[in-house]
Each structure stands twice: as structure tokens, then as C-alpha cells.
Length: 297
DNA sequence: AAGTGAACCTGAAGGC
DNA sequence: TGCCTTCAGGTTCACT
Image 1 (cartoon, chains in turn yellow, cyan, orange):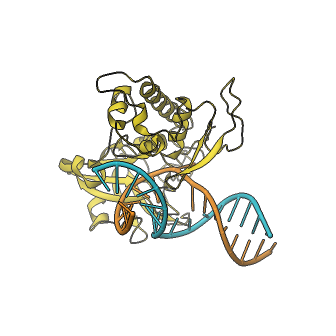
Image 2 (cartoon, chains in turn orange, red, brown):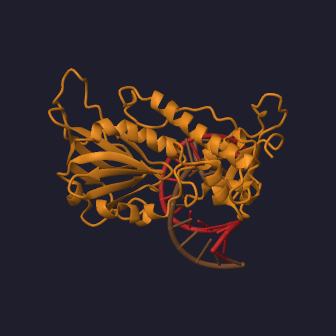
Image 3 (spheres, rainbow, N blue to C red):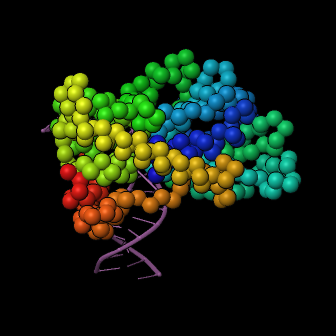
């Protein structure tokens, strides 16, 4: 389920565990995820200290001392959990046996941070659409997975003018354009639907139809930019609020419960006040789209 | 070139 | 109970 907000929540959860820690052990428990693990995957990571944990769109990037970086994607079903290793009252009692590994636990990192007990960080991914790759820090931005990514929908990078320029001349439905990572990077199926509802824009509308002439403002593009920034920011905030000491009580990270306005609400009344519409489900590009045909134009 | 649909893989849920 | 179909928050590739 990871879109940008979930990945950012995972990043914030792992950051205090990983940053400054040394990866003392790596286990790849199968030869591949979506892609084969790169050559010398385990050897390259073992013994390296994590300098920083970053994110680009839906990619997690662990910057390692020594010039390498680990690029992770969670795919559809990937998640990390940090093993708490018993009670906090008995530090240093880390157990090395793999007694608690579960189905689809594909990668196990053991990290040691200063005097604290070693901890295991486990990557679980039933569908194996996730992947882990290695890159050189100096050419990270040119890595094939990152080079073509579009603008980040966080902060102030994404403006109405930017969307107007990106969408101008495009005949594809605006919903499809939002999912195109080469334009805006990090929007997934849920937040595309949610943002379009907030902006009162029909997902069927051609993307180019909200663009203004170059240099002119577009009220629709401005609405969409604001909706995207807000829905992403609120989701990150909600995710962060679920983190207790950066680790959820069950040890898992990143997946928060959120009540969506239209996503997965086919047949329910539109939650917008003074709108009498009923949420519809349509299929665009093979993916479900949920929207209100009354207030979204 | 841009747009659409299938493919990758497993598990959950619903219909019969 | 069990078998079948459909669907799932992502990306890539092949085809029109």
C-alpha cells in the first residue's frame, strides 16, 4: 500500500534506528524480489555505516559511508519491521537465532548503533514487487530508477503553474497523468483519487484541459496543486502520529489507518456538504478510480 | 510519441 | 467446506 506518505512514514520510523548504525549482518533469504539482488549485495552492505536515510518519491535511499547507496522500493506489499528484542529493561540480550521470521521475510538486516543492543530490521513482501538495488553515491541522481522521476509533490515544489506546464497538451485522463511518475513523482492510486475529489476535478477530464496558456494562471491547476500538497501533507502527518517512539507497538512501521473521502467508497454518498452525489467506481488504465460525478467536473 | 493493456506475484474476499 | 473468480496501494514492457 505504499504511496509517498507511507514511504515517508517508513523513513521516519527507520531513521532513528538506522542512521549512524553499522550494518553488521545482511541475509537475503531468496535470490530475488522483483529483480535479482545485485552482485555482491550482502558483501557491499556488510560492515557499512548508514550515514543517512532519505527518500525520493516512493523510493527509500540509505546513504552509506564509503560511497555506496541502497535503493529500496516497497512495491505493493513491502514493509519493514524493527524487532524490539524483548524488554527495554534487558538491553544487550539480542538473540541471533531466526526464531521469529515469518513467511515472506526476504531480507534481514542486523544493525548495531553505538552501545545499544543490536537490532534486526526485517523486510517482508508477499507479492515481491519491491526491490533493493545498489548505486554509487556520486551518480545516484543518474540511476535508471531515479533519473526520470518528476517533481516531488511535497513542500512548495509543486505549483499550479508547474502542473499547468506538465499537463499542457496531454490527452490522457488527468487521473492517468497523476499516476505518471515522470511528471509528478510519488502519487499513487489512492491519493490521485483523493486529490481530484478535493480539487473538484473529474478523473476523466483530459489532463491538458486544466492547463492555461503558457505564463497564464489556471484556477483548476492551482486547485489541484493545493489539493495534492494538502492531501500528501495530511497523510504524512497522520502516519507520523501513529509512530510511538518511531516504532509501532506491533513492531511494524508505516501503515496507518486513514479514512479516505472517496477511495474504496463506491456507492456511498459524497462526503462533501451540500453535494448529493454517489461515489462511483470506474476503471482507468486498468486501475480503479473512485469519484463523485456530481461535484467533480 | 503518447496512450492503453497485460504482466509480474501472493493473499484476501466474495459468489456459488 | 471448498473451489472459483476478482481484486489489491506499483512499475515495466509490448503493442497500437
